[in-house]
Length: 227
Image (tube, rainbow, N blue to C red; front, side, top):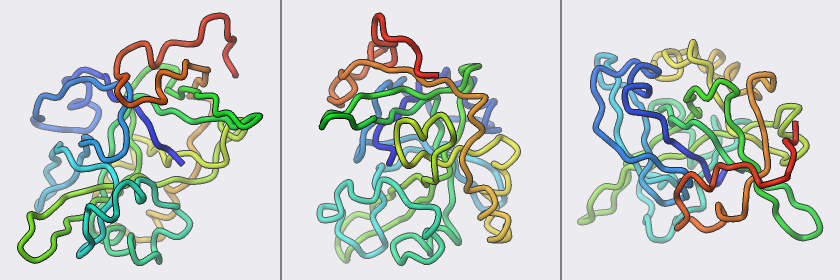
């Protein structure tokens, strides 16, 4: 499960990474949490990409956002094509969720120790994600999203039994194309290469979403890198 991540890269870097002609300004965040607005990149009719903000925690069509809450922040890639909450979005409403790092917790002796994961070159990347538009009669429509998870790579396996699906830049176009073959899409839902990632312990500040500054991603003093 992925329940926290960061997006602190400059807007120009995000625009270049995701092929955006323009993008709304946004503040850097070091501790993004469920139910908060998150940046996503999706394709408009005609193929042009847009960056917008959606609620993190997918609300299926027709569901009450207040009842669903933060339960659907992740979707297991192994069942995303068949699970009723996600299958329609997988077919028609795929998006990219930009990030430059994410957190996972290692459970040991009843406590969770947070670790931060990012690319060694500090480049932003994209989680494979889905979005949905839902609304009940007489209520305002809610646009929401979820990110896909898969088995961990060799580095993350030491911490957690799942990791987000991180897509290579070359896969962005296929993921956003509504006409992509489902078999091609399924081939993208694999663990990310571990030789481009670094993993290190961080402080428990990240446990509280009110803490949203650079301290969240700083290595814990005197704690060596995990890998």
